[in-house]
Image (cartoon, rainbow, N blue to C red; front, top):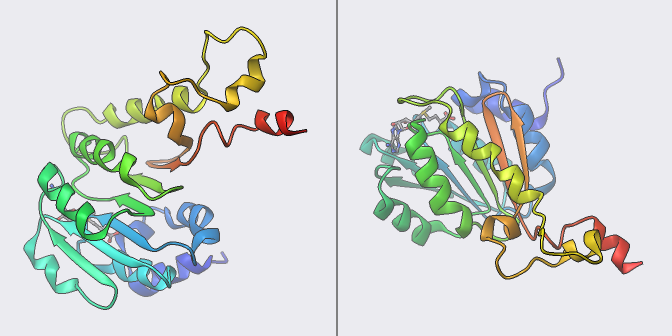
Length: 219
Ligand SMILES: C[S@@+](CC[C@H](N)C(=O)[O-])C[C@H]1O[C@@H](n2cnc3c(N)ncnc32)[C@H](O)[C@@H]1O
C-alpha cells in the first residue's frame, strides 16, 4: 500500500493514532492547509509523538499539547508547548486558549470521556481561528457511562449546517444566503461535519456565506 506523506510521518514518529488508520482522514482534511496553519492544539500528549508529527507536517505552526500527566512537560521543544491540566476543567482550557489561541486546528485525543469531549468542544468551537477545524478521536467508543453522547451531539450539527428559516416565505433558497438575527452561532458558523469510523471532523466558517445558492444570486 502506498502511504501518504502524513502516514509516512506517522511511521517516523509513532503516534497511537496511526494504529487506528486515522492518518488517511487527517491527510485528506489537512493536506491543502499545511502551509497556512499557524497554531495547533492536541488534547492528549502521551509520549509526545503526535506533537512532533504535527510539527513536521505543519512547517509554520506552533504546536500545543494538553495533558493531565505532569511528566508530559518533558516533551516540550522546538515549536512544541506543553500545558499540564485536566481537560475537564474550564480554567485549564481558558489558560490554554490564552497561551496558544486562536487555534486553527484542535484534536481531542485525551481522556475519551464523553463529558470531557463535550466540555472541550463547547468551550473551543467558538474560539477557533476563522475556518478552523475541530477533530474528536475515538467518538462512540469513548469511556464513561454513555458512549453515544458525542455521536448524538455531533449528529445534531447537521441541522445547523442545513439551517432553514421557516419564516421566510418569498425567494426561499436565495434568501438562505443571509441568516436572520435569531439564527444561533452554530447555524452561522458550522459549515461541515465529516464522520469516519470513530473520528469526526467539524469544519467552521461562514455557513450562510458558503451557501451554494448564493452563487445563483450572484449570476
Ligand atoms: C491516547 S493518549 C494520547 C495519544 C497521543 N495523542 C498520540 O496520538 O500519540 C491519551 C492521553 O490523554 C491524557 N489524559 C487522560 N485524561 C486526561 C484529562 N482529563 N485531561 C487531560 N489529559 C488527559 C493521558 O494522560 C494520555 O497521555
